[in-house]
Image 1: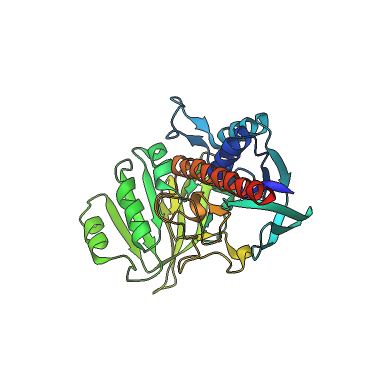
Image 2: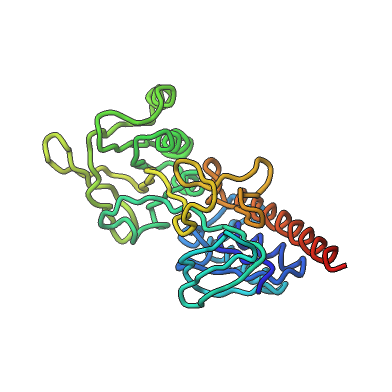
Length: 315
């Protein structure tokens, strides 16, 4: 029986763990197949406060983990297959562990970036292939970059990357973009942006020095061509990791958890959400960490209230 179980790590889950452990709640953190979350696939992180020289993503996550362990947080590796939230205490079925029982749950399972699924892509994530312009754009100053996607997010990333790149080529598999007209007009007016529409990505091309370009197929002619670039930014969306909740938590149409404004509270009392699993806008390490702090404080207050109610009932 635990007072609190945190599902998922990353900046949100680990920050929640630090705060709950310091409050003597002895939280259990369940790590999935990618302990530390998306930051473990990032090389140097230069925009997390407190590290003027930057820090490697895996090192930052390891430091957070050690900090949580120092205050008494427990870590176990497993895959949460299902959660029963119909009654408190809640029951979790975890592959490799079994059944776990807890008074509260903090959901920090994150959102996974969608990838193209082409050769050379996964092998070069963090080495020229990225899904976050805000995180990695700075490293491509003065270089040519490719952005793959046709929605608002892709165009927003393309526009942002022109601050650093000498040229940004936007690749989309259709002739028409899905992005809003105002976003299209804004990017089309940018002289640094070039267009490769009606092109399907085939392979991320590399050499010993790193990414050198993207092989694409012209959907009209069937011919292939190489678009040269030092970086390929994949911006075709994210999907929140909420499938295991089986509809017990209110989500938006895309599956992101809905929280009460200004809090981490979900529609189920005693269940809190933080990080990218409930963030459709910012998706940054520092905002995830901040929401993890909120979830821990909300969770701690909830536990205090139920303990007071229990004590009063016994009297």
